[in-house]
Amino acid sequence: MSKVIVYNSTGTKVSEVALEPKIFAVAVKPQVIQQAVRTQLANSRVAIAHTKNRSEVRGGGKKPWRQKGTGRARHGSIRSPLWKGGSVTFGPRSDRNFSLKMNRKAKRQALFMVLSDRAKEKNIVLIDELAPKAIKTKDFVASISKLPLKKTILLALPKADQVIIKSTRNIPYLKTINADSLNVVDVLNHETLFMPKASLEVITKTYLK
Image (cartoon, one colour):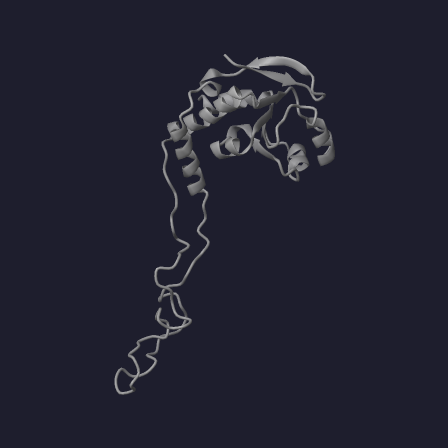
């Protein structure tokens, strides 16, 4: 059973905590993680580009000119895709559906795999308590600078704390998330998983129901 060192606010080692093996000691299968990443990114994709078809373009109710006798090509509407200002054929539509499906158990296993990888690489850092007194980004950065954190940090809180959230939202290399909302993409995008000791209990309670 792997253990993680718990630090205090001064960067001193206080104790060690054993990690739950069902979450932090799972065999990694890259194909499952890859599927989870694809599913999450696809489901968060929003179709913005939109072109109008003939029924959506304004005007064009009147036939431009009579069918025969003018010497010009026959047309029924100025909103035809052939006309400037007309509709678009096979253009992008905002009602496109990019969503993918993945088994809930497989999705949860993928999360356990990336958490296990962070534990194996010793990229999980625990602090006994994280309770800044005031909303001050400078003070928060100074307090965590004493801890063995890498370049990009995912801070998992046991519950939403507005003082911490507001103190960290201007830090470009740190993202704050609730411990019960962990996901594969955020864990992979940050080198260090940083959290108060209380977050471990929340993770275990949430994901091992």
